[in-house]
Length: 317
Ligand SMILES: NC(=O)c1ccc[n+]([C@@H]2O[C@H](COP(=O)([O-])OP(=O)(O)OC[C@H]3O[C@@H](n4cnc5c(N)ncnc54)[C@H](O)[C@@H]3O)[C@@H](O)[C@H]2O)c1
Image (cartoon, rainbow, N blue to C red; front, side, top):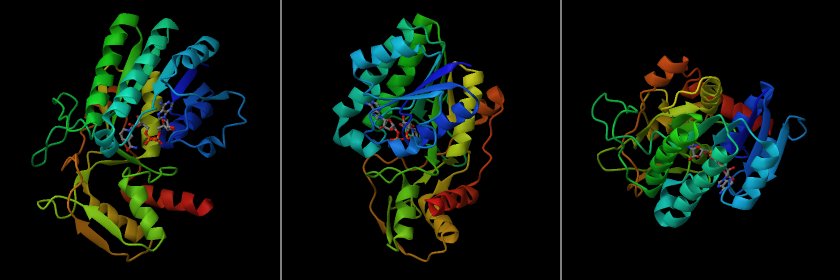
Protein backbone atom coordinates (compact mmCIF):
# COMPACT_ATOMS: atom_id res chain seq x y z
CA UNK A 1 0.00 0.00 0.00
CA UNK A 2 1.09 3.60 -0.59
CA UNK A 3 2.82 5.74 2.04
CA UNK A 4 1.35 9.08 3.11
CA UNK A 5 3.17 11.84 4.98
CA UNK A 6 0.78 14.02 6.98
CA UNK A 7 2.02 17.37 8.24
CA UNK A 8 0.04 18.51 11.28
CA UNK A 9 -1.10 14.92 11.87
CA UNK A 10 -1.13 15.35 15.66
CA UNK A 11 -3.73 18.10 15.39
CA UNK A 12 -7.50 17.95 15.61
CA UNK A 13 -8.28 17.15 11.96
CA UNK A 14 -4.91 15.57 11.03
CA UNK A 15 -5.18 12.92 13.76
CA UNK A 16 -8.58 11.72 12.50
CA UNK A 17 -7.15 11.52 8.98
CA UNK A 18 -4.13 9.58 10.28
CA UNK A 19 -6.45 6.97 11.80
CA UNK A 20 -8.48 6.67 8.58
CA UNK A 21 -5.40 6.05 6.40
CA UNK A 22 -4.14 3.42 8.84
CA UNK A 23 -7.53 1.68 8.78
CA UNK A 24 -7.12 1.44 5.00
CA UNK A 25 -3.62 -0.07 5.49
CA UNK A 26 -1.65 2.93 4.20
CA UNK A 27 1.75 3.49 5.80
CA UNK A 28 1.49 6.81 7.66
CA UNK A 29 4.27 9.22 8.60
CA UNK A 30 3.20 12.17 10.77
CA UNK A 31 5.36 15.30 10.98
CA UNK A 32 4.22 17.72 13.68
CA UNK A 33 6.00 20.18 15.98
CA UNK A 34 3.23 19.80 18.60
CA UNK A 35 2.77 23.58 18.71
CA UNK A 36 -1.01 23.15 18.82
CA UNK A 37 -1.31 19.39 18.27
CA UNK A 38 -1.04 16.76 21.00
CA UNK A 39 0.56 13.32 21.14
CA UNK A 40 -2.48 11.99 23.00
CA UNK A 41 -4.49 12.55 19.77
CA UNK A 42 -2.34 9.75 18.31
CA UNK A 43 -2.41 7.44 21.33
CA UNK A 44 -4.57 4.83 19.53
CA UNK A 45 -2.12 4.54 16.61
CA UNK A 46 1.31 4.90 18.25
CA UNK A 47 1.88 1.13 18.42
CA UNK A 48 0.63 0.49 14.87
CA UNK A 49 3.46 -1.00 12.79
CA UNK A 50 2.41 1.07 9.77
CA UNK A 51 2.80 4.35 11.72
CA UNK A 52 5.76 6.66 12.42
CA UNK A 53 5.91 10.03 14.16
CA UNK A 54 8.49 12.81 13.80
CA UNK A 55 8.41 15.83 16.11
CA UNK A 56 9.70 18.39 13.61
CA UNK A 57 8.89 21.90 12.48
CA UNK A 58 8.04 21.91 8.76
CA UNK A 59 10.28 24.99 8.41
CA UNK A 60 13.35 23.00 9.49
CA UNK A 61 14.80 22.26 6.04
CA UNK A 62 17.51 19.82 7.21
CA UNK A 63 15.24 17.67 9.39
CA UNK A 64 12.49 17.66 6.74
CA UNK A 65 14.96 16.62 4.04
CA UNK A 66 16.10 13.69 6.18
CA UNK A 67 12.51 12.58 6.75
CA UNK A 68 11.68 12.69 3.03
CA UNK A 69 14.95 10.91 2.12
CA UNK A 70 14.30 8.14 4.69
CA UNK A 71 10.55 7.75 4.16
CA UNK A 72 10.05 8.58 0.45
CA UNK A 73 6.28 9.15 0.74
CA UNK A 74 3.98 8.67 -2.29
CA UNK A 75 1.40 11.14 -0.96
CA UNK A 76 1.68 14.33 1.12
CA UNK A 77 -1.30 15.67 3.09
CA UNK A 78 -0.45 19.18 4.26
CA UNK A 79 -2.46 20.07 7.35
CA UNK A 80 0.21 21.87 9.44
CA UNK A 81 -0.54 25.57 9.71
CA UNK A 82 -1.01 28.60 11.86
CA UNK A 83 -4.82 28.38 11.80
CA UNK A 84 -6.12 31.40 13.70
CA UNK A 85 -7.45 34.46 11.82
CA UNK A 86 -7.03 36.80 14.85
CA UNK A 87 -3.49 35.51 15.46
CA UNK A 88 -2.61 36.16 11.82
CA UNK A 89 -3.61 39.80 12.39
CA UNK A 90 -1.51 40.03 15.59
CA UNK A 91 1.48 38.11 14.18
CA UNK A 92 1.41 38.24 10.36
CA UNK A 93 5.11 37.43 9.98
CA UNK A 94 4.77 34.22 12.01
CA UNK A 95 1.62 33.38 10.02
CA UNK A 96 3.43 33.82 6.69
CA UNK A 97 6.50 31.98 7.95
CA UNK A 98 4.50 28.86 8.90
CA UNK A 99 1.85 28.95 6.19
CA UNK A 100 3.97 30.06 3.22
CA UNK A 101 7.64 29.35 3.99
CA UNK A 102 6.72 26.08 5.73
CA UNK A 103 4.68 25.01 2.72
CA UNK A 104 7.45 25.96 0.25
CA UNK A 105 9.88 23.87 2.25
CA UNK A 106 7.51 20.89 1.95
CA UNK A 107 6.84 21.49 -1.76
CA UNK A 108 10.56 21.64 -2.60
CA UNK A 109 10.89 18.16 -1.07
CA UNK A 110 7.73 16.97 -2.81
CA UNK A 111 9.47 17.87 -6.09
CA UNK A 112 12.86 16.45 -5.17
CA UNK A 113 11.52 13.12 -3.85
CA UNK A 114 8.92 12.76 -6.63
CA UNK A 115 5.77 12.66 -4.49
CA UNK A 116 2.84 11.71 -6.74
CA UNK A 117 -0.15 13.26 -4.95
CA UNK A 118 -0.53 16.36 -2.72
CA UNK A 119 -3.57 17.22 -0.62
CA UNK A 120 -3.39 20.85 0.48
CA UNK A 121 -5.70 22.21 3.14
CA UNK A 122 -7.07 25.68 2.55
CA UNK A 123 -10.00 27.58 4.01
CA UNK A 124 -13.36 27.99 2.31
CA UNK A 125 -14.54 30.40 5.00
CA UNK A 126 -11.51 32.70 4.86
CA UNK A 127 -11.64 32.78 1.05
CA UNK A 128 -15.42 33.26 0.64
CA UNK A 129 -16.65 36.23 -1.33
CA UNK A 130 -19.29 38.40 0.39
CA UNK A 131 -22.53 36.47 -0.11
CA UNK A 132 -25.92 38.05 -0.73
CA UNK A 133 -29.36 36.48 -0.17
CA UNK A 134 -29.40 32.72 -0.84
CA UNK A 135 -26.00 32.73 -2.55
CA UNK A 136 -23.29 30.25 -1.56
CA UNK A 137 -19.56 30.57 -2.06
CA UNK A 138 -18.22 28.74 -5.08
CA UNK A 139 -14.64 27.83 -5.93
CA UNK A 140 -14.85 29.95 -9.11
CA UNK A 141 -15.64 33.17 -7.17
CA UNK A 142 -12.75 35.56 -6.70
CA UNK A 143 -11.90 35.22 -3.01
CA UNK A 144 -12.55 37.91 -0.46
CA UNK A 145 -9.18 38.36 1.25
CA UNK A 146 -9.74 40.01 4.63
CA UNK A 147 -6.96 38.70 6.84
CA UNK A 148 -3.27 37.74 6.63
CA UNK A 149 -4.45 34.12 7.17
CA UNK A 150 -6.57 34.33 3.98
CA UNK A 151 -3.56 35.78 2.11
CA UNK A 152 -1.33 32.88 3.15
CA UNK A 153 -3.93 30.17 2.39
CA UNK A 154 -4.62 31.65 -1.06
CA UNK A 155 -0.88 31.98 -1.73
CA UNK A 156 -0.51 28.33 -0.68
CA UNK A 157 -3.18 27.24 -3.16
CA UNK A 158 -1.35 29.03 -5.96
CA UNK A 159 2.03 27.57 -5.00
CA UNK A 160 0.57 24.05 -4.93
CA UNK A 161 -0.86 24.58 -8.42
CA UNK A 162 2.31 26.14 -9.88
CA UNK A 163 4.64 23.51 -8.36
CA UNK A 164 2.35 20.81 -9.75
CA UNK A 165 3.02 22.04 -13.28
CA UNK A 166 6.76 22.22 -12.49
CA UNK A 167 7.05 18.79 -10.84
CA UNK A 168 4.15 16.85 -12.32
CA UNK A 169 2.35 15.69 -9.15
CA UNK A 170 -1.44 15.48 -8.92
CA UNK A 171 -3.15 17.56 -6.25
CA UNK A 172 -6.38 18.54 -4.54
CA UNK A 173 -7.01 21.77 -2.66
CA UNK A 174 -9.49 21.18 0.15
CA UNK A 175 -11.23 24.40 1.13
CA UNK A 176 -12.60 23.44 4.52
CA UNK A 177 -15.63 25.15 6.00
CA UNK A 178 -15.76 25.26 9.85
CA UNK A 179 -14.85 21.82 11.10
CA UNK A 180 -15.91 20.45 14.50
CA UNK A 181 -15.83 17.20 16.42
CA UNK A 182 -13.89 15.22 19.02
CA UNK A 183 -10.34 16.46 19.85
CA UNK A 184 -10.95 20.05 18.76
CA UNK A 185 -9.60 22.39 21.38
CA UNK A 186 -10.67 25.91 22.27
CA UNK A 187 -7.24 27.42 21.75
CA UNK A 188 -7.32 31.20 21.70
CA UNK A 189 -10.24 32.50 19.70
CA UNK A 190 -10.42 29.45 17.41
CA UNK A 191 -13.39 27.19 17.17
CA UNK A 192 -16.67 28.54 18.44
CA UNK A 193 -18.06 25.05 19.15
CA UNK A 194 -15.34 23.93 21.62
CA UNK A 195 -15.48 27.35 23.27
CA UNK A 196 -19.28 27.26 23.74
CA UNK A 197 -19.25 23.57 24.74
CA UNK A 198 -16.43 24.21 27.25
CA UNK A 199 -18.44 27.00 28.84
CA UNK A 200 -21.69 25.04 28.93
CA UNK A 201 -20.00 22.00 30.51
CA UNK A 202 -18.31 24.28 33.10
CA UNK A 203 -21.68 25.98 33.81
CA UNK A 204 -20.37 29.33 32.60
CA UNK A 205 -22.15 31.86 30.34
CA UNK A 206 -20.77 32.53 26.84
CA UNK A 207 -20.12 35.67 24.80
CA UNK A 208 -21.38 36.14 21.26
CA UNK A 209 -19.27 38.68 19.33
CA UNK A 210 -21.18 40.07 16.38
CA UNK A 211 -22.09 43.05 14.20
CA UNK A 212 -25.13 45.26 14.94
CA UNK A 213 -26.84 44.06 11.75
CA UNK A 214 -26.22 40.37 12.60
CA UNK A 215 -28.00 40.04 15.99
CA UNK A 216 -27.85 36.20 15.97
CA UNK A 217 -24.16 36.30 15.14
CA UNK A 218 -22.07 35.75 12.04
CA UNK A 219 -22.99 32.71 9.98
CA UNK A 220 -20.79 29.78 9.05
CA UNK A 221 -20.98 26.33 7.48
CA UNK A 222 -20.18 23.60 10.05
CA UNK A 223 -18.91 20.21 8.91
CA UNK A 224 -18.40 17.19 11.15
CA UNK A 225 -14.79 15.98 11.15
CA UNK A 226 -15.78 12.44 10.06
CA UNK A 227 -17.18 13.87 6.82
CA UNK A 228 -13.93 15.79 6.27
CA UNK A 229 -11.98 12.54 6.68
CA UNK A 230 -14.17 10.94 4.01
CA UNK A 231 -13.44 13.84 1.60
CA UNK A 232 -9.70 13.31 2.18
CA UNK A 233 -10.00 9.58 1.46
CA UNK A 234 -11.95 10.11 -1.77
CA UNK A 235 -9.50 12.78 -2.99
CA UNK A 236 -6.53 10.53 -2.16
CA UNK A 237 -7.92 7.91 -4.51
CA UNK A 238 -9.00 10.46 -7.13
CA UNK A 239 -7.06 13.76 -7.10
CA UNK A 240 -8.98 16.53 -8.83
CA UNK A 241 -6.24 19.11 -9.62
CA UNK A 242 -8.39 22.04 -8.47
CA UNK A 243 -9.85 23.62 -5.31
CA UNK A 244 -12.94 21.95 -3.83
CA UNK A 245 -15.19 23.29 -1.09
CA UNK A 246 -15.75 20.91 1.80
CA UNK A 247 -18.98 22.23 3.31
CA UNK A 248 -22.61 21.32 3.96
CA UNK A 249 -24.22 24.27 2.13
CA UNK A 250 -26.18 25.02 5.31
CA UNK A 251 -25.75 28.53 6.77
CA UNK A 252 -25.84 28.46 10.57
CA UNK A 253 -25.63 31.46 12.91
CA UNK A 254 -23.59 31.39 16.11
CA UNK A 255 -26.84 31.65 18.09
CA UNK A 256 -28.19 28.58 16.22
CA UNK A 257 -25.03 26.76 17.28
CA UNK A 258 -25.39 27.88 20.87
CA UNK A 259 -29.04 26.80 21.02
CA UNK A 260 -28.21 23.39 19.51
CA UNK A 261 -25.44 22.95 22.13
CA UNK A 262 -27.86 23.87 24.94
CA UNK A 263 -30.31 21.23 23.66
CA UNK A 264 -27.75 18.44 23.24
CA UNK A 265 -25.92 19.20 26.52
CA UNK A 266 -29.22 19.86 28.37
CA UNK A 267 -28.27 23.31 29.68
CA UNK A 268 -29.88 26.73 30.07
CA UNK A 269 -26.69 28.82 30.40
CA UNK A 270 -27.19 32.39 29.10
CA UNK A 271 -25.19 34.08 26.32
CA UNK A 272 -24.18 37.77 26.22
CA UNK A 273 -24.03 39.64 22.90
CA UNK A 274 -21.10 42.09 22.38
CA UNK A 275 -19.36 43.89 19.48
CA UNK A 276 -17.63 42.12 16.56
CA UNK A 277 -14.16 40.59 16.36
CA UNK A 278 -11.62 42.16 14.00
CA UNK A 279 -11.39 40.36 10.63
CA UNK A 280 -14.58 38.28 11.04
CA UNK A 281 -16.48 37.72 7.79
CA UNK A 282 -20.20 38.30 8.37
CA UNK A 283 -21.67 35.42 6.38
CA UNK A 284 -20.11 32.28 5.00
CA UNK A 285 -21.62 29.17 3.47
CA UNK A 286 -20.03 26.91 0.89
CA UNK A 287 -21.44 25.31 -2.23
CA UNK A 288 -19.83 21.85 -2.24
CA UNK A 289 -21.44 20.61 -5.46
CA UNK A 290 -18.06 20.48 -7.25
CA UNK A 291 -16.76 17.95 -4.71
CA UNK A 292 -19.97 15.94 -5.04
CA UNK A 293 -19.81 15.94 -8.85
CA UNK A 294 -16.10 15.06 -8.99
CA UNK A 295 -15.81 12.34 -6.34
CA UNK A 296 -19.34 11.70 -5.04
CA UNK A 297 -18.82 13.27 -1.59
CA UNK A 298 -21.67 14.61 0.49
CA UNK A 299 -21.86 15.18 4.24
CA UNK A 300 -23.59 12.47 6.27
CA UNK A 301 -23.66 13.89 9.83
CA UNK A 302 -25.95 16.84 10.64
CA UNK A 303 -25.21 19.39 13.36
CA UNK A 304 -27.28 17.85 16.16
CA UNK A 305 -25.92 14.35 15.50
CA UNK A 306 -22.38 15.73 15.28
CA UNK A 307 -22.83 17.44 18.65
CA UNK A 308 -24.18 14.17 20.09
CA UNK A 309 -21.09 12.29 18.87
CA UNK A 310 -18.93 15.03 20.43
CA UNK A 311 -20.80 14.73 23.73
CA UNK A 312 -20.42 10.92 23.76
CA UNK A 313 -16.67 11.22 23.06
CA UNK A 314 -16.30 13.62 26.00
CA UNK A 315 -18.15 11.20 28.29
CA UNK A 316 -15.68 8.40 27.38
CA UNK A 317 -12.64 10.45 28.53
N1 LIG B 1 -10.59 23.61 12.14
C1 LIG B 1 -11.19 24.26 11.14
O1 LIG B 1 -12.37 24.59 11.22
C2 LIG B 1 -10.42 24.59 9.88
C3 LIG B 1 -11.09 25.31 8.87
C4 LIG B 1 -10.41 25.63 7.69
C5 LIG B 1 -9.10 25.19 7.52
N2 LIG B 1 -8.47 24.50 8.53
C6 LIG B 1 -7.09 24.07 8.32
O2 LIG B 1 -6.99 22.70 8.65
C7 LIG B 1 -5.67 22.41 9.10
C8 LIG B 1 -5.72 21.68 10.42
O3 LIG B 1 -6.38 22.50 11.37
P1 LIG B 1 -6.85 21.97 12.80
O4 LIG B 1 -8.13 22.64 13.11
O5 LIG B 1 -6.78 20.49 12.86
O6 LIG B 1 -5.77 22.65 13.73
P2 LIG B 1 -4.68 22.04 14.73
O7 LIG B 1 -3.98 23.21 15.34
O8 LIG B 1 -5.31 21.07 15.64
O9 LIG B 1 -3.71 21.29 13.73
C9 LIG B 1 -2.59 21.89 13.14
C10 LIG B 1 -1.40 20.99 13.43
O10 LIG B 1 -0.26 21.52 12.77
C11 LIG B 1 0.83 21.48 13.67
N3 LIG B 1 1.75 22.54 13.27
C12 LIG B 1 1.54 23.88 13.27
N4 LIG B 1 2.63 24.52 12.83
C13 LIG B 1 3.55 23.56 12.54
C14 LIG B 1 4.88 23.60 12.05
N5 LIG B 1 5.49 24.79 11.78
N6 LIG B 1 5.55 22.44 11.87
C15 LIG B 1 4.94 21.25 12.14
N7 LIG B 1 3.69 21.15 12.62
C16 LIG B 1 3.01 22.30 12.81
C17 LIG B 1 0.23 21.70 15.04
O11 LIG B 1 1.02 21.24 16.12
C18 LIG B 1 -1.08 20.92 14.91
O12 LIG B 1 -0.90 19.56 15.29
C19 LIG B 1 -4.95 23.77 9.14
O13 LIG B 1 -4.22 23.92 7.94
C20 LIG B 1 -6.07 24.77 9.19
O14 LIG B 1 -5.70 26.03 8.66
C21 LIG B 1 -9.11 24.19 9.70
